[in-house]
Length: 259
Image (cartoon, rainbow, N blue to C red; front, side, top):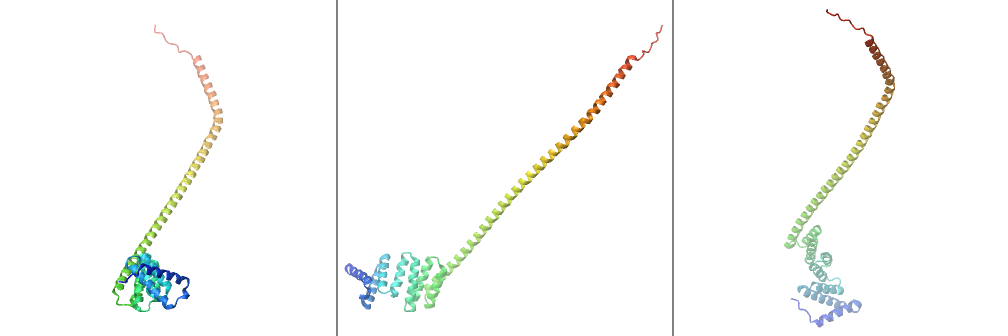
């Protein structure tokens, strides 16, 4: 358990760190290292109390005093992680791995880097981080378990992506088919309309031509037949007159009287 300094001491430390930021060249290196370790311990106390935002500030103060402090960089990543800022946490863990002075610390940084990538559902990057951790510490069963989990999630993610791509492709093809069918139907409707218009036009022209053909002979026949009809009427009238005259002059046959 890390003992938390009295509030007065904490205020003095914060004031010292502020002054350090203003005049960093006035303090000896050992003082800066001591201040960094003190800020890191304060951050650990806040972290243990669940005060992750305050822990983040204290770890940042430690890194301001000693930017190359691997423990503070690693702890800052953990404070980010607990606040759900996984991408920022991953960046801190990656930097901590680069600053670590032994394989065990470096493996732990890569392990947590993998955890942060899992939270982001960046499973392929998580797999690479876990593999790197196992290269440094092959006997870490937690990392081995997390690697198996990340591999399975990556496989599922790739399968889901493949299924989604297939579904999108099917949907696109279906929409293209529907568009083609609609276009074909429009073309067919337009062609039918043109055919109907052409048929109606042909019928109108045919009917008009037929009417002209029928009207023209009627005019010619009426002129020809008119004379023929008059001639026939005159002939019939003459025949009728002759018959009437014959009836008038026909002698009566005498009858014999039987006395």
